[in-house]
Structure formats: C-alpha cells, structure tokens
Image 1: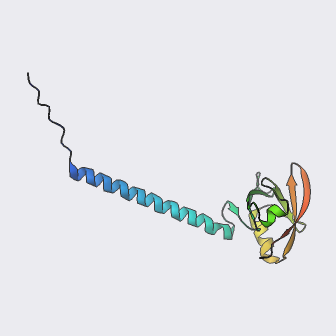
Image 2: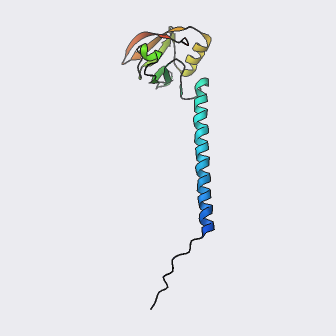
Length: 138
C-alpha cells in the first residue's frame, strides 16, 4: 500500500490577502494610538483629561476621593517645582490661600491670576506646608 505523500498546496493568493489584511490592521491600530496620544496631550490644556501640567515642572491629577485636591504625579528633576521642594505624591490643596479641589478649579484660578509667584499649600502624610513657586518663564 503506497501512500501518496504530496505536500499540501498553499494558496498564494489567500496568503497574500491575509498578510495585506494584517498589515492594514496594524496600520489602523498605530494610527488610532497616535490620535489617542495626541488627543490626550491636547486635553492637558483644557484640563478635561485625567492629568495636567498647570504649574511649571510638574504634572497634577485629581486626588482620590474626588474633590480632595490634586496629587503631584511627575516632576522635572531640575525644574522649578523640584527646586521649591515639591515631591511626587504631595497633595496640592491650596493656591495663594484659595482651596483647590480639582484640576478644573486650579485651571480656573491660574487663568484668572497671572501671579509670577505662587504660594502652594501642600499636604504630605497629614502635614501641611506652604511652598513658594515661581511660574515666570525664566
């Protein structure tokens, strides 16, 4: 009993269509990711995103639970915030004595007040301290 041991035939047209389809999917996914990242970056200015860079040298997010201030989530290592002694994890609760409960409140306050020097009320492990921050362009 001899068996016919032919190799299976590969449909080159179907294979090339499959590869083209996979390449298109990869391109669409890359484009969607790029647009998402770009939209998130634009949201920082409108503060409708989850975090914002409202003050020089640091990024803030709404603290949990909502309405309890902002939390410092990242910093430039040699930026003005680091030089002022602000640390990642600090909660921003006041700007110039005004209570701040959300990114929207902080954005509204900073838009209305062009002070080059701010006094920030920061909470770290239940201790509140005041820190001066220079937000001038220099």
